[in-house]
Image (tube, one colour):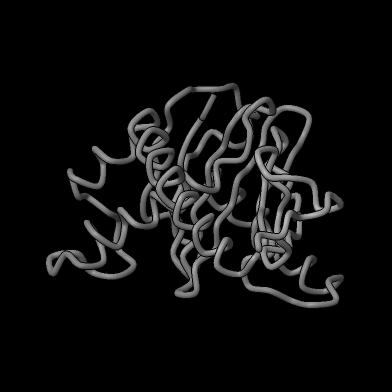
Length: 196
């Protein structure tokens, strides 16, 4: 279950948020702006910590933050935007949904000449695309299309990738140059009849 979607700009201001489920909050954080600052502060602090302890620093190093009561799914963009989805702890990874929302942001917000960068988003089209069921269904459609393309590319490299239910990639090398024995063919050990 998705509780809410938050979009932060580079300086930490929340330019778009949508809450789908109201859940109990601490009495100290009744103010919505203060709550959004706390949420962005968690992401920024964890990003700094991950850069500090990581051997190979990456920009998009944080994916999911799990606590006892919720999960925070994060996607950081090269332009400094931070996409966050808050969900219950039973929700699986929603990275494809975050990528779908980023595509919708590019289409309906960044290409919109009436939208100024860093200002709150008021696009009705973007608002319609951020409904949880639509966003998840659309991202699932895009995922299926990407998986088919991905598989074709891997066949060209003579490498097969399979994904199990836990979404762990299992690589299996296959040699396409070795001839395979077909059941209808004669055994290789049988002597061949010579025709004279």
